[in-house]
Image: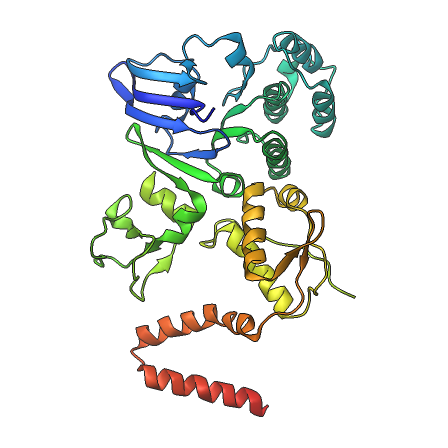
Length: 270
Length: 128
């Protein structure tokens, strides 16, 4: 029961000459809410696609609920919700037609929740999807991913097209999911404020690997910024040395040590 | 009339959100704005209102309960606890004192001199 929902082992993924993921290992345990951070082009989308089996790696293995991700069974498919960065929706259907179509694939479908979210997020019901705004399409994609009550939610920049109020409302819905079903969530975002609210864990993708993963609270509490040149006996700098970040649960910090924000962690680690 | 219990959080701060909740409650209770017996919003309500991970809210509540600032009532509701030891209140000074201690170090002020100045501040305050 405690096996990880996602297991990536020695994953290497390249596009032509460009290697995006290098011998990457990663596990996502049940109930975790993980924010995936990395610079533009770090390979976050590739990583999420590879863990879903949508991209085949040159080397290594991706398992979802213990099964090979490249050929998931219907049962595994039904337990996963995915919001891609670019919503790929059938443009000529209306929102209700699209959702009816998807409902037929899943053993479970929360129609009441779908109706409620369509109304709350003001999705036009009669227009064709192709004529909806980017934000409306993204919200529709989120509704589609939540409707079958997945155990694992993979969200790739889910709020990029949303205004601040819509973002907040989306986060509330995510919090609901976590409360009601202990949903496991992996989401990538550039909006650190959102990540700070919702993610319990943060994972930094850098140079094709997960450079660091830790509970966000701990990371904030255990990291200090020291002036250039200062060192702490027995410690290595956290991330790039020029940012002067150091992490320890027990160090006696010198008086100049300052607490750090998530922005500073991102600078040094991503 | 008691003031309603409302929390605010700031993202982008070096202080984790659960800490912000704890410190806010401590300050409001110490200032007498939130009174013993007042009921806190449930974990679910507060998590939804602030759009934060529910585990963050339960972590803050459990730590406050362990400290004796909150009590769990029959059922699940958390209420602000009765008496607080004077020691708890004195500890509220620690953040300000730590900042002062750091600045004393930066300025090269001796410990004895810093303590003398603090005593003087205390005296001025009680004379007013």
